View: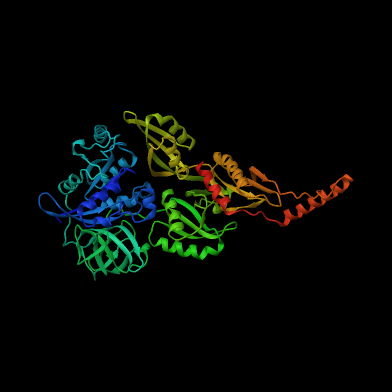
Length: 598
């Protein structure tokens, strides 16, 4: 154990975490130069396109230090977005130390501080690293001041590096082996292992990533997952290089994988404790909780014929993403589909893109919503995430919606615009302070429903990309929300219904009606588009019908002939309206979704 070091790299988005991981892996020499590629730990196309880490990765690296000793470094990479905060905390719980990477030109930002607090909660050794020192805009002295004032760390301990140019990598590796403590534990105690990740292998079943805190595990052992009481026989254990490398056993202090014929990834909970069936540990490790979705949306195939294909794609996707939940759903307008739950809006976008790119699915997603709590007249409490199940308004005594505590970091000059945006989004209890000259920290309490749509895009637009934010769930608070229905020629289109704050209902209703008027093509009958709260119509648009020129054949002559033809046409239109139904193209549903981002 003395020669093992378990560490992670934490940073704000785009501060160079993946690039630094690349240089450390290159330095270890486990990959030939001709096989190396940038962002080598990011396996998914979407991770490479967006430059973010979505799925946690682990790699075991040999390193010969200047003192001549051979060390094994376990790099446990972490996702880089607030949606995956719980996964980050479990990965950090598997480490003894972290590299806190800070961009030399951007300085300390929102997630830098958020991730630092998580590392502090786990009592980890924190090594500050100032990255991108080769940039012309780098201000090392200013960043060191921030490290001292905002992070309360010793700026003299900060290591200067440029991950892109490979500067300072040797110093970082020496700091890892000299400053991060070796793992502790007792090999003679009952097996105690922390599950920090899991993924599905189509040939071997679920591959469990774990850190061993006490005891040891080897093939043939009977293990039990303490949160589910599921029992399995271990088939293989090993360590992560770029590929899985099987070993004889995993002992205390090690980080590796376990394969035990687990057919369903849902049987493995992130943060769970693994122990031996015959010699179990008495208490599970602290910090475990179930991942709960906070954003909900329905997914439908563009063509109803593709329903079975979408069903198979979701089942396969679910094998690699235990946090994603779904169940069957149906809509009068869109047919059969699935109601899905996500950890956040980024998670929703990731699922959507992976279904389209990896599984070749053409899908329509309904407007994302959050979970609302309704207390009805008989005292019963209902939790609703789908507008279809909105209770009878006459029976609602109280409605509550989730609020989050938000922290925004921004240059001072954008303060006014951000305050206005947050107030427009029902932000309350604002606080702000100057964290350094020209840089501000703003705190707001904001409904989650206002954050999940376009908050990130608007903040980046207002601050020219310099603003950043982080948030955490606070509590449910009483709110005045209503169900907004969209009607086409008097028929409710259930796929377009939404639960919305009452004061915003008119503005949203008008936007939906106008957008549908632009996207639904003219037809032989008049199309009335209405937005209603209950029986009250609050907005409408009308698409005029095509009109055939029935009097074109009349040249001159008595006006009564023309009137007779027009009256005949009018009667025909009435009959069409009674038996006809407006045709709504698929892109109309997508167009309504985009209103949220305007």
